[in-house]
Length: 159
Image 1 (cartoon, one colour):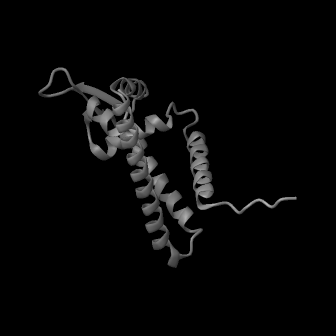
Image 2 (tube, helix red, strand yellow):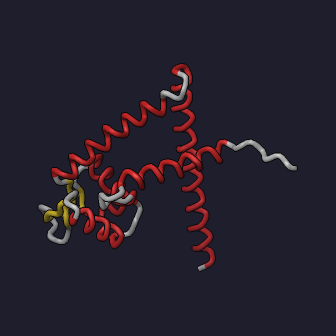
């Protein structure tokens, strides 16, 4: 019988990602929220009211995609649209009172979960863990950007 190699760091990171997705799906069950909709709320919460075009850029998605997300969030009472003060073609998206309340609750829950998860790590190791996670995230962003650049250059050469 062959022995399976021990899980790699990537295996554990993928497992953690799956566990977070499961936890989010359970937490949002019955709320009308999805991970994509919550991401919209986080962007607005941290970036302030913005145009749908700015929101699309911040999310890295199409304007059409943002329209669907904002429609659903508006219907759920989490965001409101208002006319842009100087550009009559643009619409500003902002959190409603209910959206603000939901985000405050989520931030509190995130702080509690962060504390609970960090309790599993020795206090002396926590700073190193944070630096390691930041370094891995930064490297992954760089690898993804380099791959996107490579694909764009390859597509341009093929055209």
